Image (cartoon, rainbow, N blue to C red; front, side):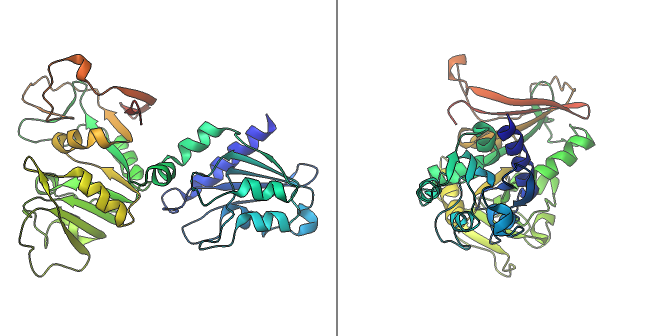
Length: 349
């Protein structure tokens, strides 16, 4: 039980750097002395900085740490990257026991064996599922070598994201909209469609933004979304407009049935170092991305449009049998102002 309590503290520490460590994981660490009193804490603050274990252990002397215990939510690294191996400083400080939440999916890491070879007791699997959930993006990146895809949906009770004329302001409450903006910061980039840019002219403040603009019909000089951040535009047009700021990168993309090839887009995003995306768009693009999604944040407002011509939150599929539905698993449900936030994923992801 005490190991679980310490691991919860590690997870709380790790979450402090949410959105700042990519492509690295979020990691928190606690150091206990030989009497099991907490003497130091640390977390991986941002990519390129020291890892959590080193941040914590640099706060104590070898005499203070000798015979103590280190608790960390992810297996300590054993290889040289941007920073030295964490296993080295654990051994140098005389730690006697290491408690680990989950194994590192990176095949370069074999920290457990290195610690055991040094005579250190190792306990693994403490709050393992919670640890995996925290670093679900990192796990997908390492195991599947692809970009993690999250969708954000805001709909009425009857699943509509706008009226037949495209009006969608506002379906959900101010509180839900503010929470959704905070969610964006968890992910490397926001992705949206040219239709959303033209219809809503959103600013979407974020360090990286992805626009799917097949025919390059958006206003690259005046649209709000192009005024800040690094931007990648996926298109299939033969001619790229001139006089465009250097912050905008164009990637020519093949088509499938008159639509941009999503598999190609996801491949290029990963090659460009974008480990996760947050998709905010209309029902058509959400419907296209749903089969590739890893997680969905679905805000449901207590409103009923009651119009079969209103636009659905997942549009574009024509199916005749319920057995052809995409089955999902609900991970979480909670109130958000007067709305409900439902977090779910496809079964099998």
